[in-house]
Amino acid sequence: MDMIGQSEKLAKVCYDIRGPVLEVAKQLEEEGNRILKLNIGNPAPFGFEAPDEIIQDVIRNLSNAQGYSDSKGLFSARKAIMQECQKIGIDGVDIDDIYLGNGVSELIVMSMQALLNNNDEVLVPAPDYPLWTAAVSLAGGNPVHYICDEQSDWYPDIDDIEKKITSRTRALVLINPNNPTGAVYSPELLMELIRVARKHQLILFADEIYSKILYDDAVHTPIASLCDDLFIVTFNGLSKSYRLAGFRSGWMILSGARERAAGYIEGLEILSNMRLCANVPAQYAVQTALGGYQSINELIIPGGRLRDQRDTAYNALTQIPGVSCVKPKGAIYMFPRLDPSRYNIVDDQQFILELLEREKILLVQGSAFNIQDTHHLRIVFLPTVDVLQQAVTKFEKFLAKWSRL
Ligand code: PLP
View 1: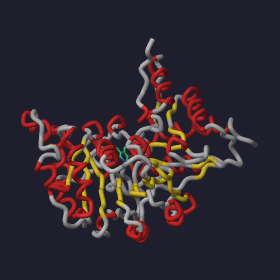
View 2: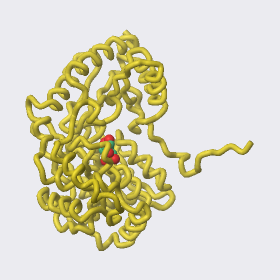
View 3: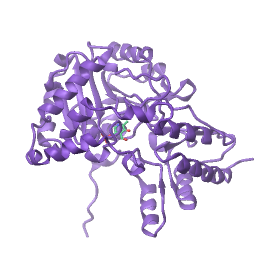
View 4: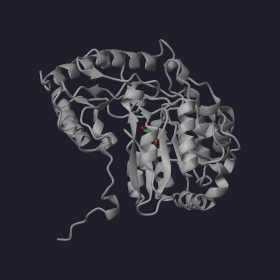
């Protein structure tokens, strides 16, 4: 019998956030267990609803959304994104520099497919949001991971980046605010990244999907607002700041030295045309979302639900002996460290699997984010404070079994 295998293109592609542990979770659910899913940044199931005016506008426009749109997206949506660029200081962006996609995910894959030849290199952060690594590999490129340093609030290590640049390096990816660490980069750090990119003529890919989810005194600076002589592609969307992950609506913005990138932009046009267009009903949400009431702000101020949940998860986790964590300044995740001198975890996927089986809590192991050690994990702080508190209590009990003491 001829077996049907996967393509060779997938040989190096790895996306463990939705990997084997999730299959076990599904199985457990089918057997009637309730699983607390702290594994995916999906706000809606935790009671985070989008502003009603967005939903109403989409409903009102449904009958206008039956046909394909322009392959780059509806004029009204792109115009609203263009105006948002003006507001946040990304200069000179025209309607034609904006592409709507079925979530940022589709555009990440497209942006790499259009760019890379076999063995071209792209600098990707470690820990990363693993879709970036997978998209580079799928496009035939080699992801080269640069270190984000936990000792320095998970900031990228500029020396490490410089050391890893070769004649094949095409681009540098930054995720700010960061998934999984919650780091928010200062303008000074962004200027350092720009300096390195300028020296080596790298393209900057800036994933800024959490740009409006900020805590304490954090301020988000779009890297494209600091530089107009490099070619920069900025990604954002409705999934997180507007809690509309299921709508699958995101965009990418080309800015800076577009004249240098004419060939690449032609490639993007081909790929954009090939997928016809992004989901049209969701494109009708964009103008209202960006121009309407920014309800995310209520959730992140002191006393706001997201901010309270971050504090609860942080306080509960860090009082466990041997657990430390850089307090997130943005996004919806924490990336705590389990002290290796106290806890003996050889295989972190096995650790997460056992946590799932015993306590019915689903987290993601640190190694899924392309780091080399086995003593980190990612937790999503979307559940209510009570649920988070209970989850951490169960986690503490479970973790104690892995103690070396
Ligand atoms: N980029 C980052 C850093 C993310 O965390 C996510 C989703 O978790 C995405 C992109 C994908 O977002 P979308 O829902 O727009 O595809």
